[in-house]
Image 1 (cartoon, one colour):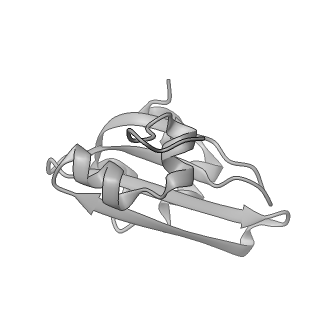
Image 2 (cartoon, rainbow, N blue to C red; image 1 turned 60 degrees about the horizontal axis):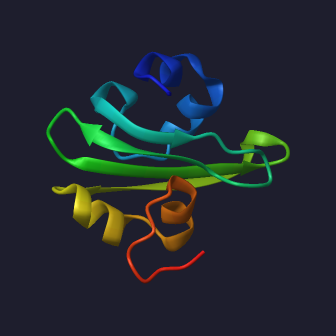
Length: 105
C-alpha cells in the first residue's frame, strides 16, 4: 500500500501532484494509488484530503519524462460516491476495481 511518505519520496508522484489543485501535504488518506509508466498508463490516485473532501488525480508523461510532454488533472468532491461517479472516468474506475453496477470490463 502506498503511503504519504512514499508519495513524498517519489519523483514521479511529486511530478504528478504538480497537476493537482492541492499539495501532497493536503492528503490525509490514500484509498488507492497505481503507478503509471512513461508513454503508457497515467499515475492515478484517490483518497481523502485533510479538509474532508475526496480527491482524484491522474497525470502522465511521454517517454522523455515529466519535463517534456506531460499533463494531468485532479477533481475534488465532498463525498466518496460523487468522486467515483463524477470525478473518475470509466478507465480509472476499472483500474481501481470500482466499476459501478452495470458497467462491464
